[in-house]
Image (cartoon, rainbow, N blue to C red; front, side, top):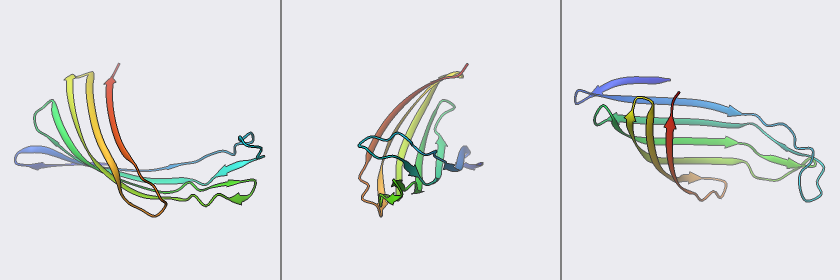
Length: 127
């Protein structure tokens, strides 16, 4: 879902992306186990983006993950994910079909021992 609004006569967008990932059993895991199973992983991601110019934009990012616990041969691995992360992004559109985005993010709050800093650079070519 994307909700546009104006701030200082320039477009600002609030984006909201709920998702869920489902996993099939791994019937050939390493280290001698017979089956590893994983629960669904629920995620909510949101962004507030601001267009500085028609080609340059920046954004604040927030994402929450919960679930995804695994069991090995029916025994819990005690690894449920419960993480709130945030970051900033900047993007530039060279041409309508070619753009680049750079992001930095980190864990803001966790209940599962997660410790993460992320830097991502993405080049997108649409055809």
